Length: 241
Image (cartoon, rainbow, N blue to C red):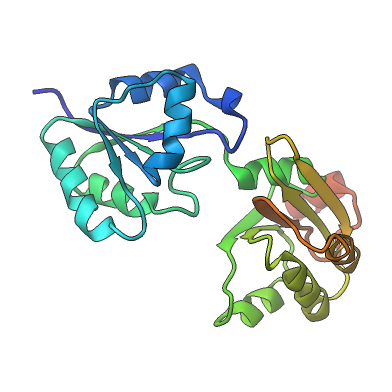
C-alpha cells in the first residue's frame, strides 16, 4: 500500500489564473480533497475541469469529527489535499489542527505554494517587509485594547485581517490608541476591484467612511513605530542591533 500524505494546496484569492499547474495536479490525483466550503471550491473545480475522486467539507464546525477521519484515511495510504476558500490553507482557517494531527500520526505533510493575502499585502504596502508580525483577525472585544496598545512601540510591520463592516471603526480606534501611524489597507487582492489605500490612520479611515459602505476582503498593514519611510535605513539599524 502506498504511503498516505497531506497536501496543503494554495488556491487563488480571487483571480483564478493564479492557480499553479502543480496545484491542479495535486487536486487531480488526491484521493480526497478537503474543502473549507465545497460550494465555493466548486467554482475552482469547474474552471479547471477538475473532478476529484472524493470531496469533503473540513471547516471550523466539524474539526472534531473530520480530523480523525482524514488522519485515518491517510494512515491507510490515501492522499488528502487540503484547500481553503482562498489562499494558503493553515493561515487564518481551520487547517492547522489537521496538520498537527497528521504530523503526530507520522504522516508526511507537503506544502504546495499559492497566494496568501498577508504576504501580498505587506510586499505591496511600501513598508518594511524584512520583519513583520501577523495577527490574523484581531479580537472584537476581549484583548482588543491590549493588542492595539502593544503596537504603540512595535518596531516590526504589523499585518491583520478585518471585516469591511468594522474597518472604519478599527482604524479610528487605532488612531486614538497608538497615535499617528502610516497604514495600508489592501482590499480585494488579485480581484477586479483590487485597491490599496495608503496614508495616516485617521486619513484612511476618513476616506473609507465617506463611501458609506465598504465591501470586499480586507488586509491591513501597519507601519512600524517611528518609521519615516526609509526601509533600507530600518534594515541597517536592525543589523547594527
